[in-house]
Length: 92
Image (cartoon, rainbow, N blue to C red; front, side, top):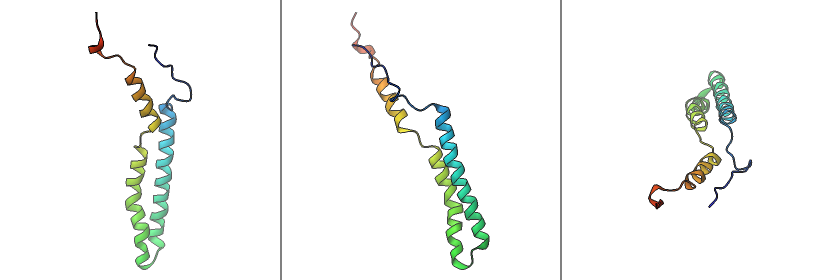
């Protein structure tokens, strides 16, 4: 039984690239939050609830998006674990 050699297309994204991607998503969400904060000062009446909601909710969404794990990485790790022989199957 030979272990499968992973191809280049099945390898997970490097940690640096994944980190940069998550940082970019976080910065976009925080930029939108700043826009909502600006609109809090210029929006009259009950309409102010829309940008206030954005100011409150966007940090939660941004942190949630920044902590999402790439599904390709977890699939690759599971396939590697399945190739490890168990200790109970060893016969001398």
